[in-house]
Image (cartoon, rainbow, N blue to C red; front, side, top):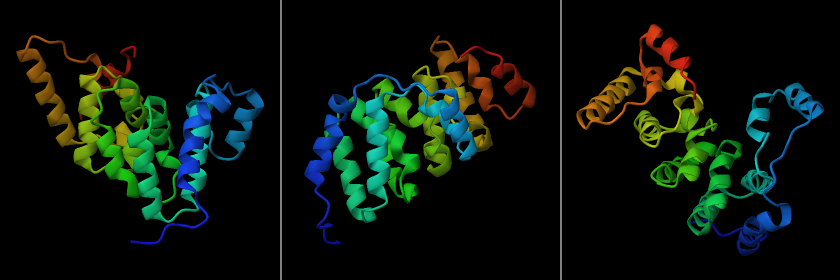
Amino acid sequence: MSEASTWFDRDHFLATFTAAVRALGKAPLGLHADERDALEAAGVAGWAEWIDGRGLDELGRVTMLAQVSRCLPVPELELLLRVCYEQGDGRERQALLRALPFLAEAERFVPLAVEACRTNELPVFEAIACENPYPAACFPDLNFNQVVLKAMFMGVALARIVGLDRRRSSELARMAEDFASERRAAGRSVPADIGLLSLDDHERERATRIPE
């Protein structure tokens, strides 16, 4: 196991991470037109929709994690993320999960992200499953499919899952059909947007017209 970086004070970082809500508040950030233009000019226009409306404390925490990920050795960063997640409240956990796409060697943190998907706290689940490119970019097929199924179970609109179109597969379609069959057999409703998981173009087109 590598020695801890002597310059990094983990306890101080954790205290600052927690204190972000007091220092920055929870007010949502609203981007101005010129700021959106700047993001577009930088080639990251797609992130404007993610940034706009996020709480300042969340954005501050995401920035903290992104910055430290470029300085700490991966083993130390893995430990830091684990402690942040296990000791954090709901908002801290959400920020950590939102930060994953911005971290150096982001694929190393799949086990933590997969574990987070098991939560029953809807806001925490949404932080990893919705408007977040990390699962589609890094999750193995089985784990990505499980995210999709849990989203349906929790009533989350499938259109919010980034990259669903490119991760759609025959296995996911089969799992969705099994899910629908079980719901019908139990007398429960089937999510109206389940057609987004179909391999049939017409079925998907019909599902995209369903309001979220």
